[in-house]
Length: 197
Image 1 (cartoon, rainbow, N blue to C red):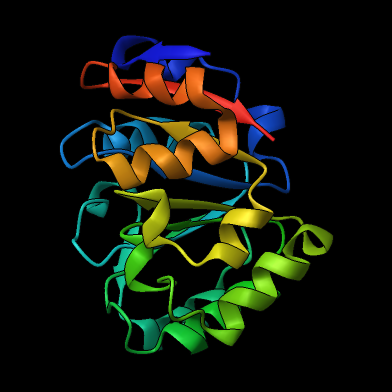
Image 2 (image 1 turned 45 degrees about the horizontal axis):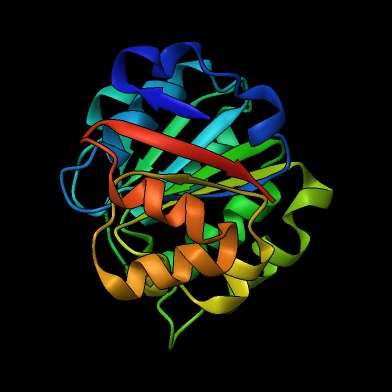
């Protein structure tokens, strides 16, 4: 499906985000984070955002990783917690996020947390077992190749904004075919294609 920025709030999210792992990818400035910010108000569960670049402050309580556990203990209603500590404390946050169900985990700049050469044990556990705990994951990054292959292989869907780099297009082609990769290479900014696997 093709969506442009004005259409993003109308797109059907229910089936795509229910116990799913979704990869949102595209060049810098293509509309990835704008798209994710557009879906947050429609998510019906608690949301935990790993936000190293401080892009989501308007959606909830910004806290260091160490304060996340205290927040969970005092409030069990749906809420949004925004963690901006980057990689410090990531394992502890992910371990706690595993106990919070149901919820959606949004990882902005995901390549910082699960590069092709590194995958934290806690994130690996959420990817492997999170669906049993009703945890959905949204990973936001510039290139499919920037994410650990174990996570890409477990994705249930992908939202692609424009990509023009040959290696990124080859990775997309391997997931959704040459014709769709060609479409992705010609998308204008703030338009995307969504794919279910």
